[in-house]
Image (cartoon, rainbow, N blue to C red; front, side, top):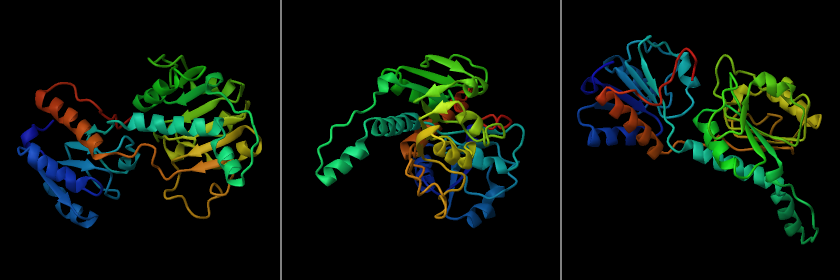
Length: 312
């Protein structure tokens, strides 16, 4: 690993210019260069040995870099590049988990309490007493038990009947009532459960959420705040037709922006938001960067590291 005072960091795109100013002010021992475009970034790429930002480059040889710090929690966009085996790759988390947890809770309660229905009654000046559904009677299944999944579990656990995590080995994680594997989830017969996907995109998770997940299920509420390509969107539409999924809240998609001709737009059972459940704030960027850089300077274990081979 390079010594801190030998890092020359290239940054660009969203938060990049502000990040450069912050580094210049608070860490004058570091050299940080902001590029206004991909062309400018490529022209000086050979002069730097570190990169910070969202992925702002097309497929590129980055094998000379010593450190990459992603401004996002998802790192799949970076995996198109070539890196050296000894690269230090870190990511940003900050308060994203809390934001995504609030997003999920808001949409679950909107659905269960029939908020949109009652707003329409108000618009029509109609007084119709209608029974609503209770969150305390529902089971929550969260695909992914990392920091984001755990933050979502924390907000739901006091309110729901139980909160079950899904991970590779069914390892019990603090904050969950229980943890199971994806294969165990497929075998469960569930009625009116709530599924929340937080999985990153890897070779193993691509199209993982398909018809086999929705089989044996009825009237699910499904939320995707992970990565769009982890979900087979065609299978979701079929699951809605079959009554396996009653409501779907989608914040991420295979193609973003979501194409205008996508069938998802017009499905009344689907709520679409434009990838906003966990937008990275500049405070998130700086919080994670400072923790990582402090550990580098002290020679202690670096937080928020990404395992390139595991792709998360």
